[in-house]
Amino acid sequence: MAQTSMIFRLELDHKKVSFGDVAATISRAGGDITSIDVIRPGHDTSTRDITVDLQDNKETSIVEALRALDGIKVINVSDRTFLVHLGGKITIQPTLPIKNREDLSKVYTPGVAKVCRAIAEDVGKAYSLTIKRNTVAVVTDGTAVLGLGDIGPYAAAPVMEGKAMLFKQLAGVDAFPICLDTKDTEEIIRTIKTISPIFGGINLEDIGSPRCFEIENRLAAELDIPVFHDDQHGTAVVTIAGLINALKVVGKRMENIRVVVNGIGAAGVSICKMLLGAGVKHLVPIDREGAIVRGQAYPYPMWQWLADQPQVEAQPGTLKELIAGADVFIGVSRAGLLNEEDVKRMKPGAIVFAMANPEPEISPEEALPHVAVFATGRSDYPNQINNVLVFPGLFRGALDCRARHINEPMKLAAARAIASVVTSDELNEHYIIPSIFNEKVVNYVRKAVIEAAILTNTARRTPPDFR
Ligand SMILES: NC(=O)C1=CN([C@@H]2O[C@H](COP(=O)(O)OP(=O)(O)OC[C@H]3O[C@@H](n4cnc5c(N)ncnc54)[C@H](O)[C@@H]3O)[C@@H](O)[C@H]2O)C=CC1
Ligand SMILES: CC(=O)C(=O)O
Ligand SMILES: [Mg+2]
Image 1 (tube, helix red, strand yellow):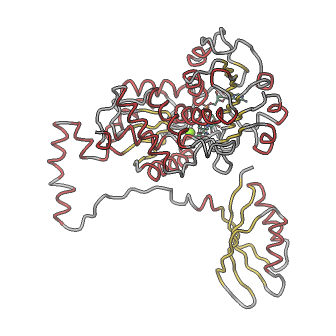
Image 2 (image 1 turned 90 degrees about the vertical axis):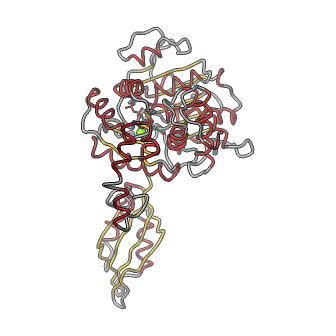
Image 3 (image 1 turned 45 degrees about the horizontal axis):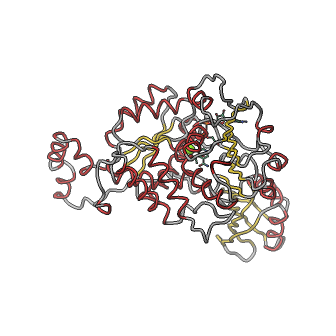
């Protein structure tokens, strides 16, 4: 259950109730008071805002317990998570003020016309004379939002705004959320192509599989700016980074481990591909109907591709059956699919990455006593394996060198760069992956991505610090 923070605005009648009673009541009902603000002091009554950390499901019991106290009026309850979303989370700022007519005639008509003509003569100038060189579209159709599923384009917006904030804060990239009200593959491709002139890159987000594969492949082939489906490749890159370091902790090698990947959708397919590229020889991909088995026929091209790989096991079975004897479990599926009995049957030195968001495949409380390394996609536990470690630095690098594409060598370089941020002195089972607030991450990823882009001839420009 997720931890949240609420503000309870209370009016206290001092003749009937003390603040000590209020604090004890909140604590008994499962809340942890983190701050108190006096909104209206008074001799007989006072109004206070009490900020409380609590489990998501405890709000009602705290309100009921407070209402049951004589002398307390609950005026308002606000969820701090909702408060930070009021009015949205990003804005657009001009780069210079328009103070007088002269400024106006330069940034807008008539002066702007000669800049327009210059770009019309040479569209490459869009990179130097418009926002294109630093702007990325974060595009979704709202069909696979976190692990919440098909919640639609309006409900997807807070996630896309969050990604845009992270792009800006972590890497200085201007990202704009675009939530499309269509699930039609052709319409999505056409729309993204149509809006692409102003963007230097396209970050596809939370588009359900299998449509996401065709959308990304077609756009990458038809556009000359990088197109990157974050849930596929961002997730795969950060997973490989985490695995490189987790294997060092348990003293195992890629070639010898048996890896179960559960959820062969957008993230799962790309993770499986990168695992094979990284040298894994025993792979068990599993979806709802059980294992994807070597030699069988499947309706989706990506599943068929997996079934044709020699490293994929030929053994059918369910997740519960096939997790026995695994060295590594990687979950990019749904909440709560495993229990402690399942992870107990893994090999000694087990590594579990339960990455479904917002709730993992198994809770840390259940898994931790039985596994050597445990990670989730969440920010409130150690070892956060989340694609936020990837997309800011990766796009920073791709934009800075004007990469045409984001290719496999660039992704592998990014994974190794993220892993290398954790030094051998720092590495331990609770610290296999750096924090997103570690300032080295974006710089290391950017550098590695630019080097790989230059080496693979996909860079169209050498940034000044690489000359
Ligand atoms: N930590 C991170 O950075 C990331 C985590 N994720 C999480 O991974 C999950 C999947 O995301 P996507 O791949 O984008 O979604 P998706 O919808 O493309 O794929 C999900 C896959 O899981 C399968 N699945 C559903 N229930 C299952 C079950 N009981 N057993 C086995 N497979 C099952 C579905 O059939 C589908 O193939 C979500 O919870 C998402 O939040 C995704 C991207 C990044
Ligand atoms: C982190 C992310 O992109 C997801 O859970 O979908
Ligand atoms: Mg996502």
